[in-house]
Amino acid sequence: MISLAKKYTVPLILFSLVVGIAYLSYYNYKTQKDLLLRQLHNNSLNVASSVSSAIERFHDIKSTINLQKLVNDVSFRLEIFEFRYLEQNGKIRNSMFKEEIGEVLTSKSFNETIKKERKLNTFLFEVRDFVEVMSIYYPIYLNEKLIGIIDLAVDISEYNLKNGSQDSFSILRRQSDVLNLLKSMEGSITNSLTILDKININDFLRAYIESAKNIVQISILDNNQYIIASSDTKLMGEKLSNSNLPDSTMLRIDGKTRYRTIVNSIMHDKNSDVKLMILIDVSTYLDHENRLFTTATVTALIALLFALFTSRLIYFSAIEQSRSEKERLEHLVKMRTREIELLSQTDSLTGLWNRRHLEEALESEFKRAKRYNKELSIMIIDLDLFKNINDTYGHMAGDEVLREISAKIKKCQRETDFIGRYGGEEIVIILPETDLHTSSKVAEAIREEIEKEPVEFEGEVINVTASIGISSLQSEHENYATLFSEADEALYNAKKLGRNRVEVF
Image 1 (spheres, helix red, strand yellow):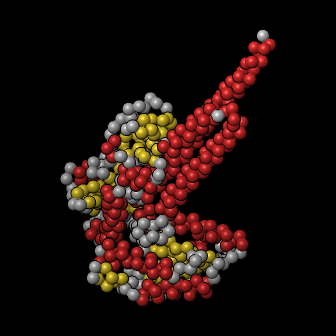
Image 2 (cartoon, helix red, strand yellow):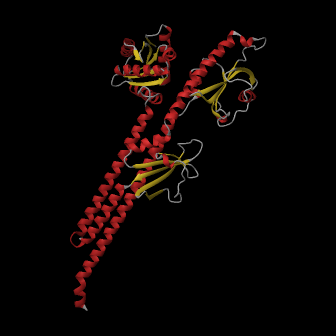
Image 3 (cartoon, helix red, strand yellow):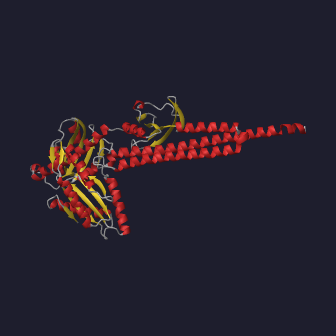
């Protein structure tokens, strides 16, 4: 019995060692596979978050119109009583009263207009909410097709409408101001809808996956699991067939393994919840899994010679590979996020920083200058008589003027300056650590550069000049808005004193 035990002691030990090492190899394989799967899951959620942010910024950039902002900017000092943007059937798409957006306008005058008892683009004198107003239903056309109606009412209670005073000079002047405002609003609406027609969410999603290495499909689902937008337009309108599977799972699609992640989102439609579905190429993950399996098998076969050493080496090698892959994916996500952030911060026409990013920079530089007692100046540049350029040569010529003037201004830019388009033809320059004397020299150089050479567009020579207002930080300034307001006042003085000049506050 003892001799039998001795005879099989070594084989038993070896067998136990092989079984133990094989089990440890399998356990190591299983652990690393689960770790890779968790990393894949976390990375997919990061990608989904990045895509959701991208879609949100996409819709912000492409948001059609902000009538409230437009009315405030170009109201011609009218006493605006009501304004709405309506669909042809009277559904309110935008209004100064947010609570009525989505409702249908049912006023008597609108119904009479819709029934063609009264023509569009005709001034009415009526009473709304016990206030005497002059109103108009102004049509918006795109490619000769009626796409919407602006309902605008102006308070004229200060005028006596009796005895034919509706034809008075004051009322006629108000009507002229109203028409000018409506034309501005019409241009904003049609420009926005033109952009919306040219670029849609499907194109955006398709461009996004083309720039990503491991994303193969992005789709947006409604509450009924129907695909309402996708990088693959052939899927539009289809219903998710395997909706009973977990939100994060491996799938075989067209003979290839994909990792599917579905997350809740409200980016596509602010009024209803939708879901974002992302399919990720997992070939890298499968390669790692196959490597782990092969390594575990080989380790089990050579367990007698290299059991402990090889297992330890493979374990830490796999961990390092997983860490490297995780860092690579995280770096890729950061790069894509940065590209999207840059897109959201840039004005698409001029290539300058947009207004939102400009205001953020101004607030940051203001706080830094106040904290460290540094100089700070701000310059507002406004192209003289820019409306005449648009009216004379067309809006495409006006856009070309803005592009070329922006390029000229950037030539004069110093390394630390921050240049952005504030709106319309206004360009703002933030000059950190710059006093009023130096900023005046910079402004004069910019003014001369703009005036020096005219802009050529389709054979037309367009002379352009600019008025510039400058203000600098003083100890009594409590916020950047005051500094900006002073520069704006200096710009107003430059305009008042004859244009094509630099004025300081």
